[in-house]
Length: 119
Image: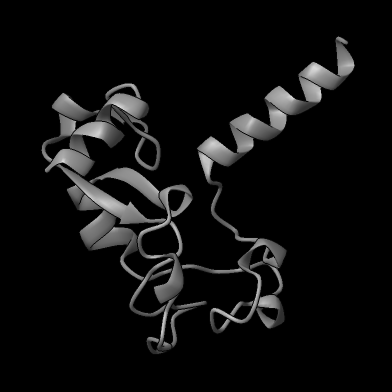
């Protein structure tokens, strides 16, 4: 419950994935950007394990609408180059190029570029 509240405050009462205000859609879910239990690249079966080592990493947690998370995204996590997938905690997930955008990470990249440009 506390985690959901903190994510709500951090995400300014806004769901990134479905681009809606929280109180317009319903209760929120704590979504794992990289799914913890297993992943799906296309329409094939669920591949296990998922990104279990990132399950409680703050950068992997997002606030999501229930419908988006439970009925649409689920464990779907396609990569631009599937052969780069981190399959265990021994690999570096930072080397992946997800099809989905992690808005918080993209904002940090833009801010970093702006700071460099206007120094």
